[in-house]
Length: 384
Image (cartoon, rainbow, N blue to C red; front, top):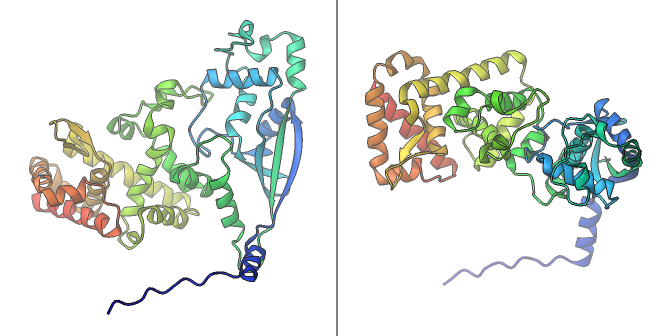
């Protein structure tokens, strides 16, 4: 006899009212309007923090989009408010509006010239310092609305301030595109470990392997990113930083549990207070394993032949090889002389349809991740 399905008890009005009372955020809001020069001062004096390009996301506006924003200010078109989070008394971090604030600061600092304007086409090619004084004064009188979020926590049983902050980051979306998982980690787990991930994503060998335009050629001394790097799909949504993070998250066997997202989140949380010496060791580990992979596989590092016979880079293959080399690091002296056999073993492994599905097919369960690491570790180990 089939077992009857249990029915979910319908919540009563009293239950709903109680949940509303228990979980409602103690979130106060203050609203103010600020003149553009005031905004520049607040940012330059670091009263409003986290305006660096790495913060939140890398969907950096190009000069034409920044110019259209400045034109909107000239035309007195309504602008969406900026959201700030008060993390300490009179100290704020920008939760939403980074691109708008950066555009104001950079224009007032004469870091870009207006371009692509239609209503004010006469100003194309002009920087703030080159505008007529009347227009400068007009811009100086324009205002931006700012909403400051003051989080006081919740009543018993509700989320703590950290959870509130995380949820607000996830839900705030005046720009029309939500933060992805790595952009959110970058917001929530700022610190030396996160800065290390960003620095390693700029490593010349790493950018070469992943076909990311090299930083030294595509970022100027002011930190402005040119179009080719800005449009790179790995760079623009911080996938490059996530690739680095995956190595640290997967190298620790005890961390391979739950979803991949939870593994990556845990790694960030566990290392948020990492000391300088630990950061140096982490950085060296990543670079040396990456260099070893390149020395062994050359231009074929982390690549496989697709159905068309073309070499295609694979994130799961990268995960597995990086972790396998980390596990076999003490045997590294034997790997270089055996690099031809290593390549043959990996190629043979991938010819097996079942192994190919586990390694390249991108299954994201903890079991599949662990199996991927084990298969590649064993194949490389057998070659030496």
